[in-house]
Length: 471
Image (cartoon, rainbow, N blue to C red; front, side):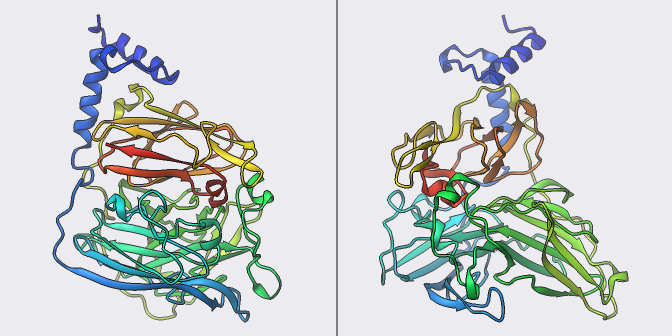
């Protein structure tokens, strides 16, 4: 019956598009064959386990109230790790074990979630799911060996809409000694702040306005906790620039009018091939690594970095090029994934889970944001089979933005609104625009109970979260 490959392809594509599922025992052998092929293609795309090298990096963070010069000359009352916004960058080598003691000096409980890092489930930092809340005055030790090199970040997963807005976030970089060395390795943490008189944080959180819109959008955009900082560079330098969006709700579309950056990693993971930075939408939670060369002819000039995701582009930062003689530009190909599955036949596979995103009246805040008409914590836990190719459909039924983040797993986007999408990189967060449907595919290889939620923090706080169990 299934010998005609053209007929089979059309049939499978039809079933997939219309989300017609077939019980495993009734699926045609073509489905099974394609699934097996997709699972074989995935092997070694990224490791299931990592062997620790024996090096343990012991650090301590204290979360406490302090002041920070977000908009000089004013001093803003913030919450910070070790007195800095963002926290001091943590750098470790691939294979190192991080042992970090967090002490809570805040006026409320907290935790740390290691965003994008495939950690043991008990280290994921979701209170009531993977660990208890860290009470005021108490400490908790996080210990894990990251499985992947790349750009990651960390933040509270308790009362996140307030705690992250007040300044609690930091970057964790896992370095791979096999990757080429750039002239500079720069981190730029993008955020926005809703400030009142004397540059103080507006202290009403998860408001009806935020909930009815795309979360909390501030009136001041910052890079590394500063408004429009000036960053020194040298002619000829080749720079690895790591951009991290930690904002509650704001989407950034970074642009470099005088340069031609190439993206070679997304959400910490190397892409199959570098590609130009052209209107890439960096939603809350997303990261990109850029390859940038400062032209020799730009000595003494200022190069702007702007955000184009707004009615009027805004300046984020300035690269101040020194008047010095140019340095020698390192010559190498940008890093790229050693193995990236083709997954050309992924579009033929049926949808395993379908999540509809919407809002309804009621709940703690008067508005509940829902997944399949359920608001966390009263939501159903979904199960994904370990090591089995999985296709998930996300359908945004609302008129608001939703950057959906999945803990513990990486995924690829293969379709938007029914049209094939050939992204050549992994993600842990994908932005859904109004009324948009996105299909993602993944291989669940990290077991545990993982949060899946909107990274507009107000939406998550008002219920747009559920749990996905991999077993």
